Length: 161
Image (cartoon, one colour):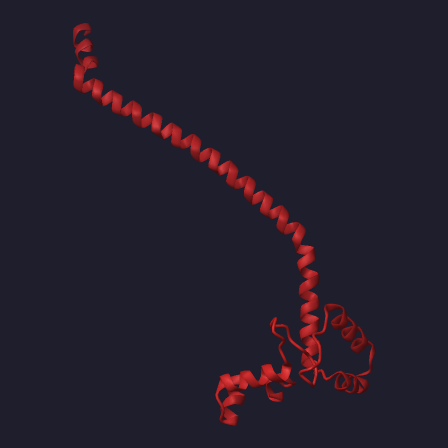
């Protein structure tokens, strides 16, 4: 399991093939080792009785790890039952959390512009539908008048010419 979790990382398929077990069995072992509570949140640490780290605790771990020398980092992580891969995951979560907040404003503005554009296009579509219906009605009336009264325009031109 450490081959898939720790550096250098390897794919679960290659480790499962090497160990002679199925990929699903390896996945179950990894989940058990990482620990997952009923809510699907990862429980970090050596023992499955460890609690779920809150976002604040993850930030504290990242800050403490950043302040330590590389020689001290291993002892710090072992003391908490964590691996460097956990730190990478915490960093990714922090970056994702920060990027979502900055994009919210621009996403809302873009969403509003999109809604306004949709409203404008719907108005234009209704206007064009009405114009098309009016044109079709005029063509139908013109054909019916020609059928009922004949081509009056050509007979009047012959009399005058």
